[in-house]
Amino acid sequence: MPNERLRRAIHEAGLQLDDLARHVGVDAKTVERWITKDRLPHPANRAHVAQMVGVDEFVLWPQLVHGRRGRVATEAELIAIYPTRGAVPADTWYDLLESARTEIDVLVYAGLFLPDGRADLPALLRRKGEQGVQVRLLYGDPGCDEVALRGSDEGIGDGMAARIRLAVCSMRPVFDVAGVEARSHGTTLYNSIYRFDDELLVNAHAYGVGAPQSPVLHLRRIAGGQLFDHYMASFERVWGRGVPMTAEYTERAAAV
Image 1 (cartoon, rainbow, N blue to C red):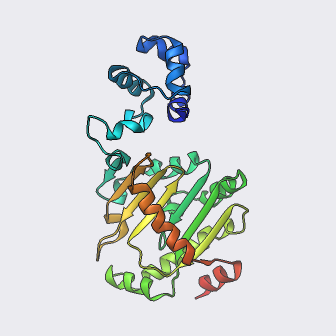
Image 2: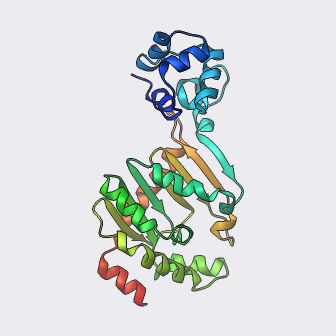
Image 3: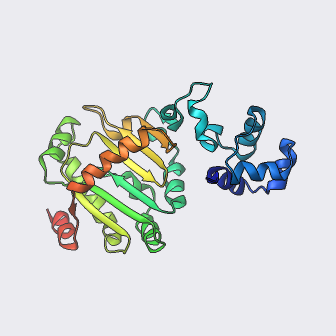
């Protein structure tokens, strides 16, 4: 099985195989075998390659996570942890959106900070849908008991439902785009989930505290890891229970 992670990392770093081989001190055929035959380089060469392409060697060679260094795959999935959502660099959200090539999934109650932070977000998602990216958006049902309880617990009362209505109104132009599907849900939201291909931002929630003040995990899918798949399985369960947000539904929600 070819090592596509390594191939992609070299390409994204703007390097040719000859360049990498010369800097590492091996011949180009050796580098080619690292890719085409998924050969594992010597530790010093791995470290040098990882430094040159700017990617952790556990990402380039996932088989290492069960090796002598004792680092398990699940630990390798964690790229960063932020103490609050506000601590995530603003560009991170939109860079991940822009770079997505196959899948964008969002599970929130409102997620209003996304369209607030970028007025052209509907246009961006429209373009992604037209490019063949599967976009799935899950918003809270502003009339459900779970949303009312969350608003009460966070001390904002009807403000939670109002934020959902604003978010839905902001994003309504993209709901009719091929490749984009939006649903509403009435589940208890334990985590807000934002998936961009093999990267995931998970905004954990704590009782009585708003999402902006709660931690965010930045995960990257790694072979053998459990965290990415764990949170995406949760997303799929909510998606399966979601109600499609038709034009009639969004107009009714906006009028309430």
